[in-house]
Image (cartoon, rainbow, N blue to C red):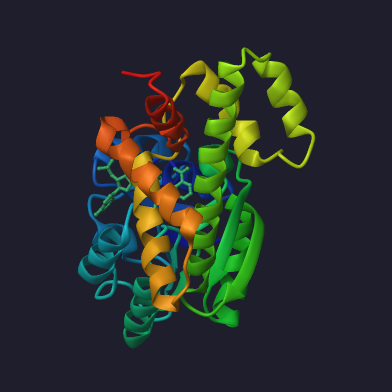
Length: 291
Ligand code: NAP
């Protein structure tokens, strides 16, 4: 069993940390707003008052933070100078691949071993420990992390060296955003035709149009239930990652560029705090259906 300093106990990090505690690990959690440590303590973990306190004495440091600057600042201010050499740092956050590579290099200079291990599967995946985890880093470090990763994930795949996990996650976010936009357009189209929506969603789900997005988001769009989940603000961040990583590689992603604009428009309309399925509201607005 490991001692795990877990930083970032939000929608995803909270349930992940609790699963690790339930599996018998000594999980010491820190979150910017301290009340989020309460659920971890109730699940058998411990609360720390600072990043450094969570990291001191840990064999493993797990991060689940919003964006690249958050991971950079937590790592440089609280982890690099505090963690014991040999500590395994697992960054579950979705950040820029180039930043992940750079941070892995900095961690190595401090004698730490770092993996980028972004996840897919949403809040439900975190709560049910069924996440898909795309891991970048050295073979031996991935092998060492695998038993922990398999506590929170169902599909754990080593996709390459440092940063590779984030590259695959960017592709994941491109696919998910595009899928959400098309499901939103299809539902708007079906509504306009007065179609039997539950029947349509059921039969679409059984054919090539079926997807996890259709299964998990279509009914919520129809119900107007946009509680996050995965916030539009975070998907906007991810579309910026896709856009810059594509430009770095000299690749054009025309549909991705359009979907990035739709995500940005959703945010500009004041829906940044809603679930990314609120792209449906943007499509409705474009059709004059929403004030
Ligand atoms: P979230 O609910 O906003 O959680 C982030 C947590 O990090 C918050 O509790 C926040 O504290 C805390 N935090 C921020 N800066 C901190 C700092 N400097 N020190 C300590 N704690 C800090 O976001 P999330 O949905 O869990 O997403 C986390 C990451 O997972 C993101 O990179 C996201 O893109 C990725 N992701 C999310 C989903 C999803 O469905 N939600 C799915 C896959 C991947 P406060 O309470 O003070 O804000």
